[in-house]
Length: 263
Image (cartoon, rainbow, N blue to C red; front, side):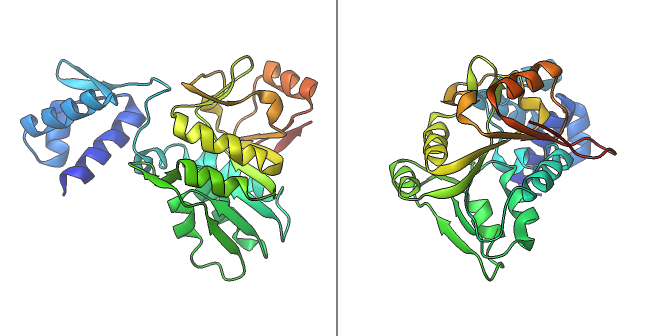
């Protein structure tokens, strides 16, 4: 196993269990404890984890991002629920903008039964996913590749997005807060997402339940700039009232129960 593969697996374990133990990892990956300590020291330097005696604990700061390939495996069931709900909101022939979030791939997978869609995206992962769809127009924004994110950002991406008039923009975020609005961990991503919202007639926020009542570093927009919120679990009554008062449509899924809608 390559060192990068081992580290990604350790990060997945950290993400799931919140802490790891050196001796257990050494046995699991059949490497020395010193090798595991070096891995954990690397995570500590990058801000992903905090070393503790005999192991490490996950850094759950909203402004710290796990590598894309690790994040995309988190809460896959919730992301698939969100994707199915969004599928019902997209019509054949529409022009949609999709961001580079880890929810984006399940969304475009769910949309593959639609006809003649135009998809504009700065996500490398989405572009790869759609290489086998024959009757869609798939447009890359161009831009600068952001390390560990599989995303294109910067002035060229913004200029490209600003040249389109789409039916719908679908994006995610790191935090959704009633006072602070919609936020992300990275300003480069926030800037691109702001222009995605401006380029679309309808703005859809796709977020799992863990993003509610959280605030990250860089503001994307106010809650009032969103037309619809799609999430995997029923939000609190306070959130449902908040959406209703502002005319924000809310779709949510519940395990083993029928999907629900609040308007």
